[in-house]
Amino acid sequence: MSLMNTDLHSSLKKYFGFSKFKGLQEGVIQNILNDNDTFVIMPTGGGKSLCYQLPAIMKEGTAIVVSPLIALMKNQVDAIRGISEQHGIAHVLNSSLTKTEVKQVKEDITNGVTKLLYVAPESLTKEENVEFLKNVKLSFVAVDEAHCISEWGHDFRPEYRNLRGIINRLGDNIPIIGLTATATPKVQEDIIKNLGMTDAKVFKASFNRPNLFYEVRPKTKDVDADIIRFVKQNQGKSGIIYCLSRKRVEELAQVLQVNGVSAVPYHAGFDAKTRSKYQDMFLMEEVDVVVATIAFGMGIDKPDVRFVIHHDIPKSIESYYQETGRAGRDGGEGHCLAYYAYKDVEKLEKFMSGKPVAEQEIGNALLQEIVAYAETSISRRKFILHYFGEDFDEENGEGADMDDNSRNPKPKEEAKEDVVK
Ligand code: ADP
Ligand code: MG
Image (cartoon, rainbow, N blue to C red; front, side, top):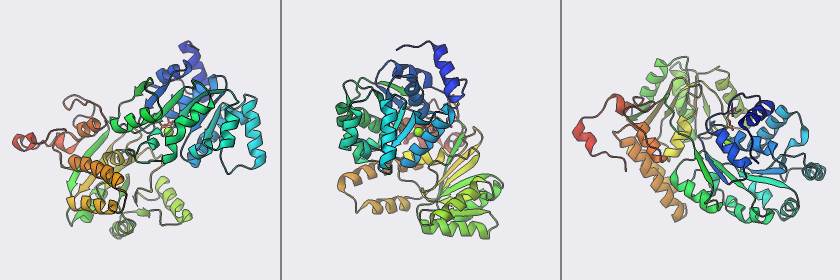
């Protein structure tokens, strides 16, 4: 099936209300419509969902969307139903459905109404579901958050490893679409190998965020005072401060409050009600600052977060990129400040010591990269993008002077020893 671009645009308008494709979307969709395997690597917020939703709606049959989180799937299904005003067009198939609901879902699929079927990998591997899906018309399988396949990713899920075998049982030559926001070459290799998609066309968007300013400061015993000063200089602006431990989150939130900064704490140790209260206070701008563990942020879409501070260095460059990525979503200013002391790295190493050896090795390798980032004297943007396999021109690239090292270069002699590995 090959479509004129005008048809694609009118479908985009009709089903999603958008008048333009974002980034690489159009090429991706064209490739999927042509029944080719497709690998999409785009940063969070890049618009990956539409890459499979639109062709799913346009193609005959049902597209299976594998996704790791039930909450994510529910959101997407509600959104799709909202725009299409058609009930059966998207469904979630999971173990929480009643028998009657399962029957309805299956009926809609059999009747060709359902264009998108969201499943968690553990539901897809269930024998009764495989038996059912094998006998219906499928358009393609989209594997969202495909990095879950890789131990080098930040969210490894062993069930993702079984997907290829299951997809083979569902039919011959069912096209596969893998999607992820993880840009590291290692994770990408794992995905391609595991999903058996060596012939896939790869679409990779740039991970450069030119409006973000990157800075690393040495962490001393005065770190709290330094943070207070920073926040006060940015009064009235929204910011997130990440700490490693729940205890530190609570302490720092209190120190800020005592010093007249409106701040709330957030971590997974609070009950759901308290968490959503604090989250809402931040989103509604009743407070400027949220001090949080990494439990805060998934799915938070506040466009005008003006700074992200890391009180403790995170466990990988990838985590750092994801967490700082919550700043400046609206394209405006976003200051990303990390405090770094080597003894914090040793703390992170200690955390891992109880884990299986293979996991420790990976964890340590990732840690060494973030150490190198913290200690580098080259452009931090260049360093991050290089880690993601992307070249960056530190003289003329977009955002070239948007980091501490580029603004204040170290003396030549010192800097020379510091090259990107
Ligand atoms: P990702 O999965 O890559 O993180 P999403 O699929 O959640 O990103 O999309 C992020 C946002 O971009 C959503 O709010 C979505 O509605 C919006 N979006 C996607 N495509 C377009 C487009 N062509 N025009 C305008 N907004 C878009
Ligand atoms: Mg997504």
